[in-house]
Length: 114
Image 1: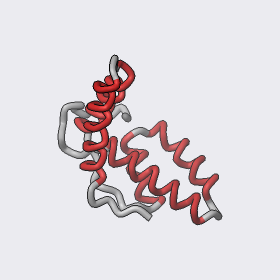
Image 2: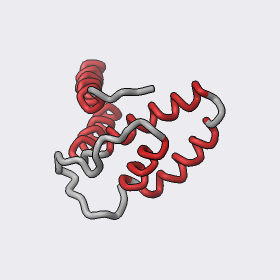
Image 3: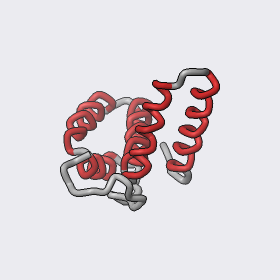
Image 4: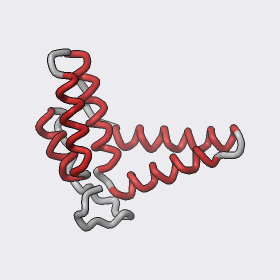
């Protein structure tokens, strides 16, 4: 995240849900994590001229913004990623994967992707 002041337990979005356009997503990425803007720009340059690649690019970054725009959600996803890596049994891993899947579905519900 950028060096802006934010509360990692906040359930309030840092940015509103972005339109799934290059300009809107870039603005959100810049606000959420300025260092990631260079990656965004590089990936966009690589996808230009290819409709499928551009669609994948827009979908990927729209999902990234949704994941990080609410600090509490980003923190919980990170906790689940760590828990997945630490799972000692298949049952634990499935439980974590299920929660992650449900959370990501909730976060992206209503997001219109290309």
